[in-house]
Image (cartoon, rainbow, N blue to C red):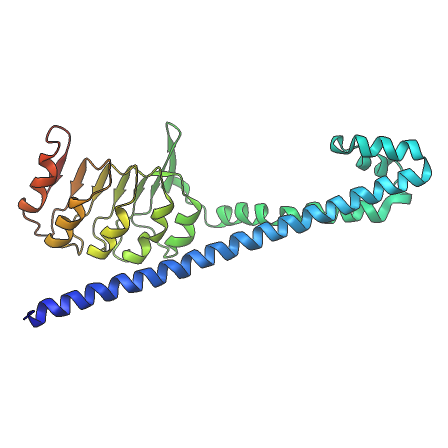
Length: 258
């Protein structure tokens, strides 16, 4: 007979995993829709630009056949645009079409730069030896997902805030270069640890004063990220017995703080 408390804990853990899976799927769908929209806008701009360029070549061909052929052969050098500007009065419409294509195609890129300008991270984002370091501890905003989704090349990330939960960690699965992660003083639980297993470059993990448990840490370290060398679980009442087996696999390089 499974004790009522253990049964409740198992049900709660299962519910958290299910909620995280649903949340992750929704967020991934949202990112996919944004990316699909951006690609669609860029394609539309390119199409308009191509139609306008072909229109210019057609006008040149009607005026002088050899000129139209020449522009077609040198299209990638921008000669149709030069021709259109030289004979601007006769080519206003195709030039406007090309201009519209350029403007529309640039919208996704301009939107990304505008976002970074408005939501710039300032001193919280630094590049050290070509590696991106992101410090969001003490950040006064809550949209972690948007920021982290744009910073997939982060190497060092600090997320030590009380509003950081298991769901906040969802974008981390897209960070193959992440080596150092700080989650001190967060609401991360054992379910959140499951999301960190697949981080291929993770070497240092700080989980001081979180909601992780002895069983969760033991399960996590039974199959940890392949390069993990340092873990801090202080303030969580995690006994050394839950950490020692992992450390003993490579005692010279692995260390823990409990």
